[in-house]
Image (cartoon, rainbow, N blue to C red; front, side, top):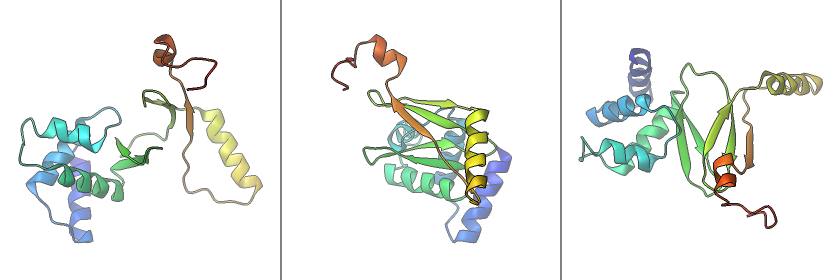
Length: 152
């Protein structure tokens, strides 16, 4: 976590943001998360021990973490965002359940190779990409939250 803290503090200094205890608390708790997290869920965890930290501070800090590449913001179809750790994590793609909203990470080298090949064929220099596949997870299928005939 020391590298992440150093990166964060250096970014705060060079970008003109203030270094605060609240931002350090948010960083530490965010870095302990293993899954995708909404600002609201992170705030809920934080206020157990730090009730003085508001949701807007959490959201702004997550945005700063994304700016300095410690986090990745994922925009959902409903307009909300979730965040995941990014620093020193391998690139991955997502399967997203349209019913419960679950994000399942996966890595597939064949897909990565095809994307690179397509870019080369078109003389395109790829900087980044994301792949999101929407469907119904096996838990929702099992719970019959989704019926085959109606597509909902």
